[in-house]
Amino acid sequence: MKIKELNRKLENINNQLRSLRVKKSNFTLNISLEKRKKRVKNLIVLGANFEILGYEKENTAVILGFLKENLHKIEQHREYYKNIGEKILEDRKNNKKTSQDQRQINSEELKELLVLSKNYNVSAYIQTEFKKTLWETLTVKEFSQLKKYFLEN
Image 1 (cartoon, rainbow, N blue to C red):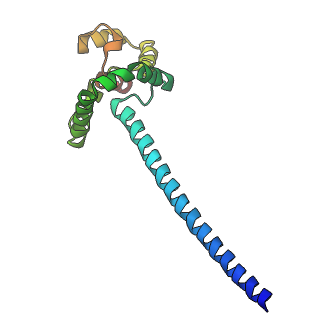
Image 2 (tube, one colour; image 1 turned 180 degrees about the vertical axis):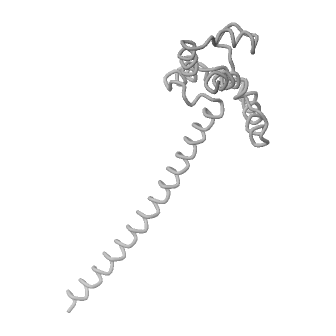
């Protein structure tokens, strides 16, 4: 009888141990799930920041290289850059024009202009409408206006 009773006690203890392991496993899963959710949210925000500035089409190696070379500037002027970023986000929240209107076109947009220039006198339009001689200094707003003019007429 003692052996049966000891076996029952041992089985109860094993069941309790299994139950505790399951609870611990669920707790660990919840913690790692929370960490993953925070990480994913952070990555989405970073991507959204590049989109806000109009650099979502830029080559990732270019962005990574630029950031690597300029990390020391962030460390030196963190508050200054934070204020700029907060102003952009505040303007965006208030539906004001953001830096998208001031951002110059990137290499992909420049390639689009080159294709357009095969059929249209893009340079003359840029000089007349924007008083500029270099395509690279066009803003995204000007680029959109230019495309609209040539592609809708």
